[in-house]
Length: 471
Image (cartoon, rainbow, N blue to C red):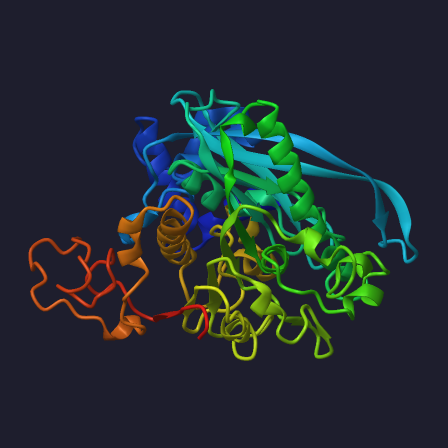
């Protein structure tokens, strides 16, 4: 919190600063005329120094990332359900740990966030999390949510989504998506993988080894608890499962969909993945049963120039509909070769490829919290150099909603939001678009080639491609 306080106090010295803007909002909120920093300090006295007040100042004007802005495409909007969130800890007994340099066994603890449709009422949660700084020390931050902790679940059975975060990330940075989907009738389970605090080097192989194993374990554990009637898992329909993963989590969900792991991963992971690589006895056990859809955001094809994640042709083993999302300037996992290569290689499944032109790798996490805006390293966990993050999130929520509703819920009406669209968003037109109602979303074909659900002049800089099985 010290870093945030320092940044907050320093802003007064800048023209048109963040503090001056927020000061006006805060004074209006408390029924007072706009004043100087000193007058606010005098009014609030010692409370100004307290974390609770400082936090409320920031949150007074903060919007929960799960709720998209006014320029969001149609399906990005939150759904009809209130959202609850529950926190659990899952334990995998006697797991191999390779972080010490030599394999050892210990129990593996996985914290789990679960978002679910709920009854309305209660105070929304404030998420607390941290990401490593350049010295690998954690930098704490908060993100406002729309979910209410332990809210009573809404009646019904809802498809299950496993949401897998990226390397050194946390579930909280994807809470915007978990909450958004829960409001639309999904139960979303997001494990915290506790990656080793390192960037590159041998310790990253622990995450390569664990992602698919952890996803399989979490899915099985949610199934078990759902069958036992434990809340909120009892409301999860485990016959309808979707996987969503970002970055390292994208590698995990593609593997869990059935892609064949490269045998080179056996020695690279200290033998952890040896039973699961292509041709090994347990190779098929990582594949998730009853899987209806996969969303892979910026998944890595390889680590470095030599170590491929999957065998040549390994993506062809996938039969599940897949939606790939990538930035056209992703220099971490690559676009082409990279995510486009995976899209082309998954020849036996219906699949989509959404490309944000000029975007980089950091396309999936929420907008940068205030505490992560003092230093470029911290901000770059969240933000893209070109695209506004809230815009990226809204478009992703729109397409992920259409894709999951179409393939998981069987809602064929949502197909028109992803099928039959003109591939290059820049080429879309709407000849008779209303001139006075500028915010009206495009109805899509045959009336318009402007992507369905997007407003006029707000579908630009993207491509969306589809390939059917066998192509």
